[in-house]
Image 1: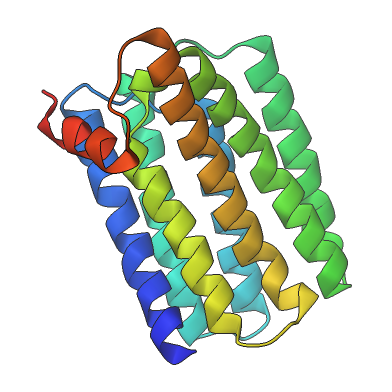
Image 2 (image 1 turned 90 degrees about the vertical axis):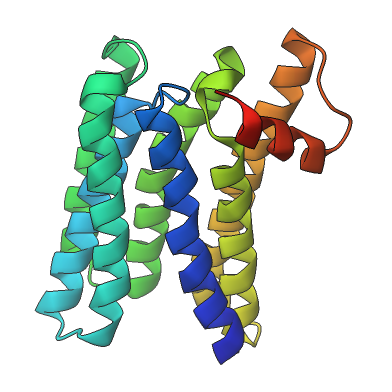
Amino acid sequence: ESFFGALAVLLALAQCLPYIYDILRGKTQPQRAAWLIWFALGGVLVFAQLAKGGHASVWVSLMHMAANFTIFLLALKYGYGRFTKLDWGSLAFAAFGMVLWWFTKEPAIALLIAIFVDSIGVALVVKKAYLSPHTETLSSWVLGACVGLSATLAVGAFNPILLAYPVYVMVNSALTAGTIIVRRRMLQPAPQTIADELVLESEAV
């Protein structure tokens, strides 16, 4: 269990690197509203953990918040399109969800609200990946699915509350990666395997 927990943390660190690299070389264009939602959600999580006396667990959340903040800052300059009515509506809905989460005393309900807020950002990215699959970094989402799988295996027992979030991360990352792969193949000739797709992505300029 501890092995898979450590592996999940390492993969989460590795997940952000190709994404940031691709942004800086002009290949990836982040969905601004989605990364703002994820940064804000991470910030609320950090403050919630600190308020409840969290120490070691806060570092992982801080890592995620810092990565999301970095990508959001880059998105302000290199991001995809302009803020649309859908983006503003999603941000407002996510903000309402975060307020509910902050005041929720029941852990299970708070977890479901957090997943709901996070999923708003995921929906925006999946929509963008469907329309413009080449503006996303496939390897980051594949790594994200591996993060979710490793975190799921780290739970070590069937506990719906503990399993809910890592399973959600695995599913949403796999959905995003799958959307990118399918749409790239629909829009132009593409390799027949995911491995070939990742090789081509790493070689692209």
